[in-house]
Image (cartoon, rainbow, N blue to C red):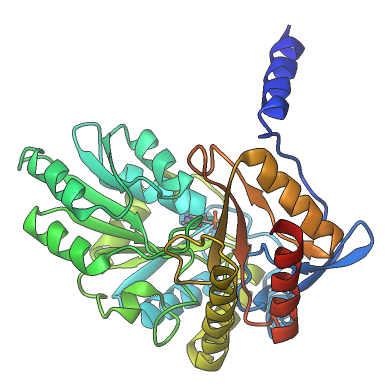
Length: 385
Ligand SMILES: *Cc1c(COP(=O)(O)O)cnc(C)c1O
């Protein structure tokens, strides 16, 4: 009985070229990884700075293991809150120029926990159409009304805000860097609208943290809006090369979330050795402007070369570069051909992206060499035009 509907569903996915499967990597993360016993150039990780396998982070994690052991043994509010977590939260707040910060086990859980703690069934959440799935799931968990506005359309957002009773509690939430398009949210305008309509403003810096801003703190930092964005969320699993996530904001926000965010309360604390590695990553991020400049230079170079070949990379201005293909089957075929040439880049299809906008989602690393980028461009030239 159960097998019937499972097979039917999987057959449909296969027919529509949406069937997804796991691919095994046999090496650490990095600019070169091993798949099927073969080295391939990696253009699809979020390890922007190459920190996931950095010797300094490995040593920090090893020292953390020696000092604290492997598991944290309990949730934070019971007995799992260790010195490593306290130091990490202090460091994040300092980097973000906020009063306080709180660490969650993952970015997915942070978004679910923060949103469902701040709004309820009588409230309204205004969410960019291209926001990450974890934001949508947070809104569903909260039972609040979801108002999705067209991507970065501030006029549409203002109309929705205008049409909402003044008495309703409102939350505007946006990715800072959009995870599939690589463009940035209009944060100045969002700040103005949030003030005008008395809405809370939450920014997800999953792809901004470690990549943008003077100290690598993100887009909010780059634009000098630390005092205007009440809720700054981000993850430690992408540019920071570790695992876990954070929210940074006022002391009262953090105390409120400790008491109300269910995905913080009802789960085991992050392994302390990972918190130690994240502390090391934050020190590196703060001091390493050079590496960030290299990352942005690499992204700009690749994007301009792709545009010169006629590829549509949407409004990307970051190391996330979409190459729009349109058709799901073509995107998968292109990804397969690149793999045969030793380049690993994933095809992204609906429902992750809108129908008809299947793409290769390229992510650039600071550690990619000019030769790596030129080889990628050469392969795109030969295999698609
Ligand atoms: C990856 C991502 C998350 C989830 O973070 P994890 O730590 O991987 O769970 C949340 N928001 C955005 C925009 C992301 O890209």
